[in-house]
Length: 364
Image (cartoon, rainbow, N blue to C red):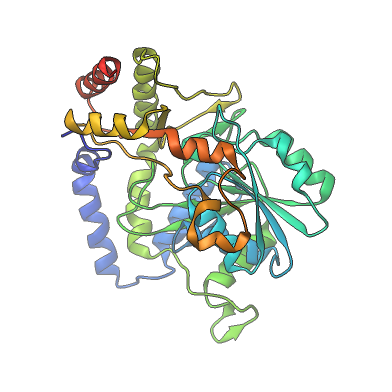
């Protein structure tokens, strides 16, 4: 079986250093908000080209805390793409705001900037630009709209560690960016972890306080905060991994290029890459009108494929209160019904890639 994702080779290469990182934290006996977190957040901010980075507990918390720090709450509206992982929309819900869905560009799967302006009202406060599957949104028109209407732009960069837009990395394209370091991400911890990047020092200080019970000093709470901090152990592991991220991403690009050049089945729609984009291929998403049939076929060939995401946000029971139904967001529904994610990870061999390509080309 060729798995959808596999950490084995990556972690074997780093096993000794990861063990040393664990031992150092263990011997230090300091597990929260210590030098490992400080070291990693400094390095990750520099990697993204941002001035500041705040460690948090996970990717969902990164988005929720950014919204809270911008004082977005009840009665406010936040524009989000109609096709994304539910965490993007949950973050809006958790601060009491209303998510306003906007369809994606069918060729890139990221939010379509030409559709945003018509959804803006007097209650709109922010746009969340989701860099889906490892490809950044078209940020220039999004930022222009935001300046026109005085809106905040929040990057959901959970799938875009190292992705670039016109030479600038994700995490340095909007007012703030939320990252997830869930183990399956391009840069993954060995558990849940996340971070926020920004160039705004006031925002960064407020975010640090919000994540530490709203406190700027022991027992001095100026915000109604939460407990969401990047722990020392995960920060140490991430510091070991970060120097390898570009190399791992380059291997993903090599695999993606093999898929794009090799797959020639007329029943398969390949992903497109915009000229402004240097993607990191967190997900390699193809489409077909026969999604279930192809998934079953690949399984019989020993290939594990998945669907991202099989039920569009507006069709989820959790969001039936938004009042949408089938047909309201046809592009998101089309992607849900047609998308298949092929194996994509550092350690996937050329031989396995060629086998996957040959199986897809032979499928009828």
